[in-house]
Figure 1 (cartoon, rainbow, N blue to C red):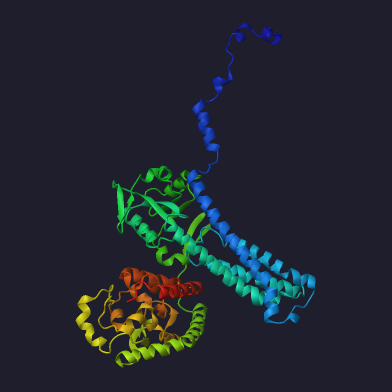
Figure 2: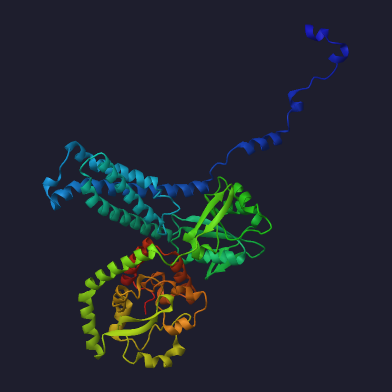
Length: 520
């Protein structure tokens, strides 16, 4: 016995000495507290998603670097060949290093503008906008720097590298996007997606995603609230209906889904989204909230947290001002160029029309333009001269959607007219309508007066801007689309048009002319 113990009273020595195990919490509680403090780790599903994203970004990064380096390095060669050797003036040490400096700044700004973010690559115009803005800022910075420091040699980069490099960058991004779309047809490079919500909202989301299989979301299942159905069918395609709203995280894990789209949430559970996001940490890459408002107003929606309160802002569209002036300037320039380039082809088309039946070359018809103003549209005549008189007898055979009249095998169409319609060459004279201000290059389809009389208040919004020779309707299926789908596409364009979107539609129009779909 120690001296301390011998000094204690006998009664105190008899008391039991508490041990560590007597005051420690039970082992399961220790494990629970430990698990709560460990940050979530990535699951194999999430790692698979991140792997293909990194692979695609590496491809874009390598292509961008190769294009920028070539464009800047070859600029002195272009300058010597196309201008004159004597133009290369200034400090040789500086001039020799201008291509390297330009390339470094260009690649840095491309990265700073997040031009390779997964959210913008693969679809939409944002990727192209960021590449264009980053390239413009690059040469703006360099030009200012050379002026401030009184340096020479940047002029050649501005003249040659800027336009050639930007064009090559856009073509490179477009080429990789085409490759990505081909891969997604086989389910590669796409997010395995679980759609959650009420039946109507789930069907709406799935139908939108499968309408264009290039959006990058591969639906692997659906969780339908308040339904015991085992499957859901959307446009002849069946999807498994699994789980319920309380075990979405577990269902996503079982299906190997790395993205969850909430088509609608329980109204009685305002904390549902936040709780689900916590459950998905480490197991999924995206939790996406779907809203039908975004179908038309998508580009005008922004999220702005105000003192912790997330507010969704919807910018009200405007149909006047500087943007329309810019659109008009682009229309005049494009129409003038198109009329000049198509002049020889127009002469051949006119001769072919005359030789077939001797009738007039052009067809003029009343159409309704912006603000309900009527104008005379010009086309190459593709029908017989008595086409309007024979229309009444063919109304019962109408295959068009809504108030449109369309027939795949319209007996009024001439042999030359079928060729013109197939490749949209009958619409070439409409560039004259663009030049004089009746139409735009890109816009809604120009309707007939009888069609406008059948419009309701919603469809009449198509008349807020000038009709176009081409548009979303023309490059998305044309006459094969339903009336509702045609209206949806036109309204989306009317409220959200931009110069970059117009350029993309023009580019897609060229592809549609070579590979016609729905043209009759």
